[in-house]
Amino acid sequence: MELLSIVGRTAAAYAVVLVGLRLGGRRELGQLTPFDLVLVLLVANAVQNAMVGANVTLVGGIVAAGTLFLLNAAVARLRLRFPRLRDVVEGRPAVLVRGGRPQLDTIRKQGLTEDEVREFVEEHSGVSDFDDVDVAVLEPTGAISVVTRANRVERTRRTMPKRRVRQRRVG
Image (cartoon, rainbow, N blue to C red; front, side, top):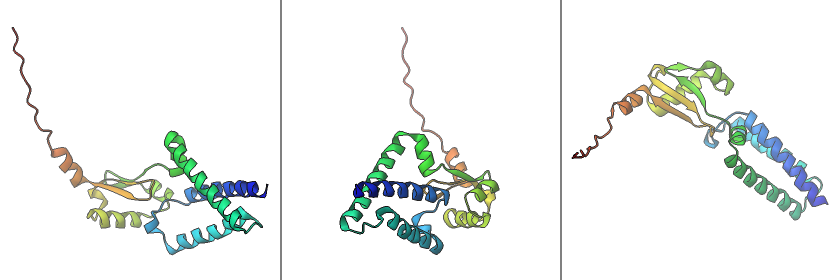
């Protein structure tokens, strides 16, 4: 009965941490600030006690860890099957710059500043002005994808290879 209690507490802690991370915004692991890292470590420590309670045995820890692995595998499979769940768990891409214009409401909503977006765009695409950006998108992973106007023009200037059309003789 005590081990079943650990499973229930661990499932509740998993759900709370998952929701908290989703509400906290998107950053790639490599982009975690010291503040983000401290928060993750403190949450892990706080939740650990809530999951196992007074049971500090090896079995209690294994049950909690196993429950986390099973829940994570289940959520991973369910999000592939149900697109709405994927949107809830992972989020949707957010357009930060469109047609050279920063989308200030979206930038603020994502917890970013215009300067942070400008810095990233310059660092990773080589353009120093939003006017040169066709679109910049914050992906659910926390990465920002940038398509510059030069890339778009270059892509659209390419022509499709001409196919030879066989003529059929009639009659």
